[in-house]
Image (tube, helix red, strand yellow):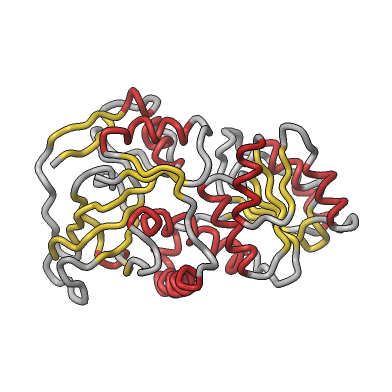
Length: 327
């Protein structure tokens, strides 16, 4: 089969190479999937660079989520039928940028019928992260104000849609007029172009000085630091990632004085510690998709040959919505 493999830690265009390798065989408790679509995520770039929290042995196949078709079952696997369309996370070294991938059966979920292959591939991690961040960690309530950074990106766009579905007023922060247009189309009530506007001032004006009840931050760095200036009394800042490249060191005395919470979110831990909650979130997301309330924004469906370029574009912050590779 064809598979993209990282042979050395570097920028994605330099690190990834399209190889011909044997197709994997499912072991006990595993499922073999034929990849129908694999979504590109920022962690794929970090994996290429050797900067992710896990560092697979070289060479490895990147790609952390997919929509696939069941092609084989390992020993002890029940409840899945060959040909069934499913979605799943993937874990390098056996990642999703390949024609076939082996994944643990426990993480396989039915693909929502309302979504096509590319949309289904992009639903899992981004929307699960948003669901747990907004509902489980921040307990977002109807009528509250939600501030979303990188609102036109893969993770941020999911949070915008989920925030609106939860009945919140959503303020989206983006970089540039094209991304501002996308955030508005996603449903953000107010959009701030950080290149020309101060989001702190906009949030304070929009909330009558109260501030945002919940801040959803996949960027880190200055976005986090400035968010502390416009978070409300008893507000919650959800730390999702550090796409901006800088991990902030928050002044905890400020959190104490202003009475707000800083909440970390590593969605992958729920697969380990509370898989039942992951399945419950998927049921809710499937319902929202069937109602048309949420739909992953796919800006490009790309052939297998363009995977390395796609990961590089995401790494460079040149994308809106999601890029998806379809073998």
